Each structure stands twice: as C-alpha cells, then as structure tokens.
Image (cartoon, rainbow, N blue to C red; front, side):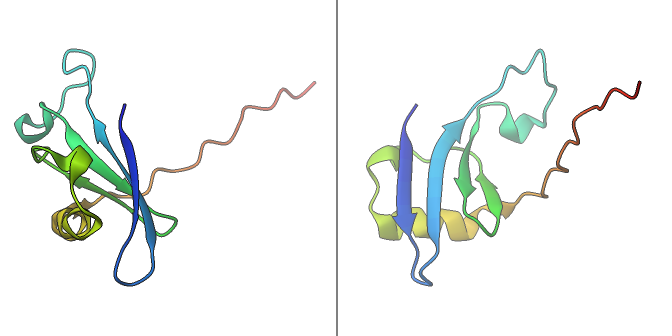
Amino acid sequence: MTLRSFVDSHGHEWRVWATSTNVIAEPMSVRLRDGWLTFDSQRERRRLSPIPESWSIASATLLESYCTCAEHVAERATRVPAVDID
C-alpha cells in the first residue's frame, strides 16, 4: 500500500492512500466500487473517487488539488469497549 504525506497551503498535514473494498462483503455505491483516495488529517477525512492515475507520484500541489475536490466524510463514532459487570 502506498502512503503519501503532504502539507497543504494552509499548513495542514495530510496523509493519503488508495482504499478499496470487497464489494460482495460491503455493498457500496457504484461510484465507489473501484476504490477511492482517502485523505486524512487531524481535522477531517475526505474521499475522492475515482482514483486519479499516477496519484502516487503526484506533486504536493496536485495532491492538494485532489484533496480540495474530495468529498468530506462524516466522522465515525468512537466505539466504547464492552465492560463486564459482575
């Protein structure tokens, strides 16, 4: 798996990687079936589909452009571990 990092023009650090899923196990929209780029920062997460060709060698400026076009992803709720009560 390729993992890239870049700092955008606002000084925010992002990590980006290609994400794919097993469509049989996890039904998804047709738009996402071939995967997407995940952009992750401390502030938010975004998703871009389809995956642009040669994204893994793109400049930081181009990665920021992709990130700007990516859709915001809702935060997942944090799971609270189960506690046994005796």
